[in-house]
Image (cartoon, rainbow, N blue to C red):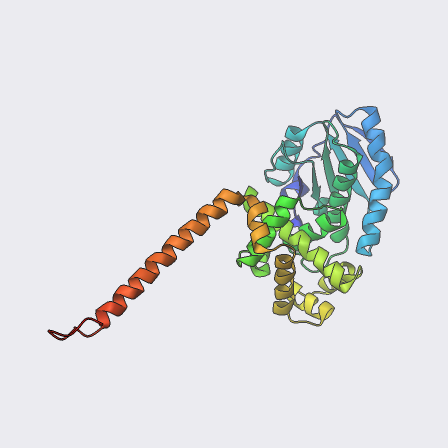
Length: 308
């Protein structure tokens, strides 16, 4: 898991002393590196990966990170959470957060601990660097769902089959977040945040697939010019914002059938069988009620009349 903290929560950081007393420091091309609790091998491996990760992000986003930034390597997740809390007052889960970007400070934090493979390190780097690049010259407002979705997309994040099924199921039943809802407040609790992250990622996958690899850079250009997201999307796609949103929901739903999404999205066969049984029982009761109402409306039989 990675996190981003926005300039709006960085006022405390501007008046706080540097939180990296006791860290080793070095100045490298384009950035400052501070570290504590990292082995020399892990630190050198990271240094070797940063240039390629940054170049890949800059190419994907069509803009350069034209200012120096700081990469801080902290020993573990608890130290990372403590540093973030001291700088911003925000809380991040120490055991699930691999990195944090604070664009307003030009700061990228990475925690130490066992690496889960080179691919994971590269993905984390690209994700956090993407946050810095997105905000490098932004003069307009970049909503959190846009920032998160872009960072996930350019870092190569892929949804698991279960996550895909969950999103497809929500699309079928009209349960996806509206962009207006995400823009007002990107959810922070675990389950809704997972859905919001996945939905934001898939939106930018759809945007790129339909409108080409230049769609994300163009959208960022429009936001930097001062457009809001609906206006920027309308200029990019030549569709109304409602049409873009409807296209996305239909595309997500079409990725899996409703039955397949139900099976894979966590309900399982017996849950579905039970649900169908309940629906059948409800249908039976409704039919009986309708028949009884029809019988009650029939005129009474005349005395002595033969039964029909």
